[in-house]
Length: 188
Image (cartoon, rainbow, N blue to C red; front, side, top):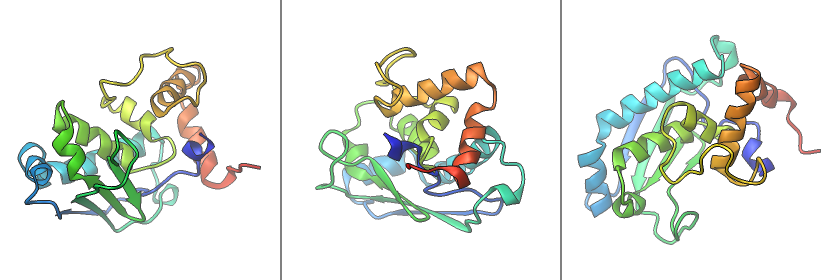
């Protein structure tokens, strides 16, 4: 779980970011569902809102606090054959790209728009990702409730709730932790 608290940012945020959507699975059922239930405009708006929310949550009010990212690409694609969640991958980040699985969208039994919104908030950053998702109000229905789990690092949902607990004891704890990990984090 130390990987979970790595020095953050799959993508860190800046003021003038262009959000680009590519639906490479447009003809698949999941690609069509993405277009119908989420859509390009909503996805771009959500990325922008998630960036603003995350900057405020982590107290990153100056340009010096942020990594300079000019463009973030959201790519909806078929990821069959990859596995992380129920024999398939939901999403992953690579440099300034968020890759979303059309197969996951197709098979997701609940509110697709809400789940994609939560994933976009989460995938803008790695590190304290599920804490951001929790605080943004997009915790997944299947997450454990506060106090669930035996150890703080038992799973992403448990870690998110643990960080929320710590932040409740000391307001700003997670923002401070995030800031320290930028330059001081070490597994040694």
